[in-house]
Figure 1 (cartoon, rainbow, N blue to C red):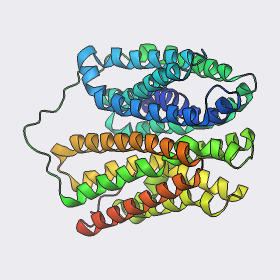
Figure 2: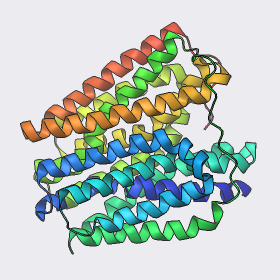
Figure 3: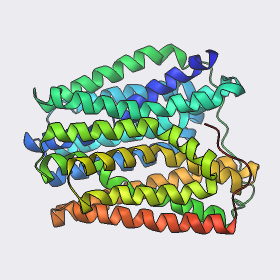
Length: 388
């Protein structure tokens, strides 16, 4: 169980920064609107601001760690996450919330990039697969917790939700504080040559970017769509979000199973095609069983694609360029995700309907599946397979 010593701090970091601080907002949206804290359009734009913050956090994480050290960067990100959640308990208007939701998005990007790298640096190679699985499963567990906790706390008022989230973030910060010591020095890669990408690799990155558009309607608006758009109420919305989180918890294992069964190159377009259908389901039917299926499918495949993409790039890119290729793919995804968040928020403010957002997400994923299929045809899968 030595690997657990390296896994649990990362688990708490992703649970706090992404599962709670970022995704709990989706469950809170209908309550913020119902209590008059924010307008419908304002609540949507607030979610988009968080995605933009995530992009800048992911983009600047390595330079921040190089400037102040890994330990200080990780501790600072957790402290700012706690502060940002606590600040949102003060009802000081839309722009106050924008600043702090963007800050929390930024810290989520920093922690997603640095936490796993910090822990991998000193871990035994034989346990790194299990360490990564545990670290990124924190996202799904955090979403489940947000689905369970937000609705009961929101009955007391939205400020109690922010206070509860801040308390959990503070507990995680304290629990992991001493563990963020002894990390290695961050060395930024020297750019002595252009990345040697073939067409198949570019198509794989394009397919991954399409997921940044495809899942955004669920990631931002799913609970509000069910609670207010369908008039099912916040309890059903919270239940749907809990199912989304359960799917996300199983997603990394699902990615491993798909890679083992079909090969990584084939799993990529297959997964995007399945997710496209999952995103489109609420357009076809709004019965509770179909909403549950959509929650589980989209939730499960949301964390599965980073795993599939990184493995696919390992098949397509020379080892010397793999780190930079994955970094470029991650930043591309984050940028597209942020842009899609603002575009969908603008479209919803003008149209007043969620249905076009799900249609747009499904089409984007379908286009991504075509790109992934073209990548597989240009460079058939090698014999290397993902391990569970």
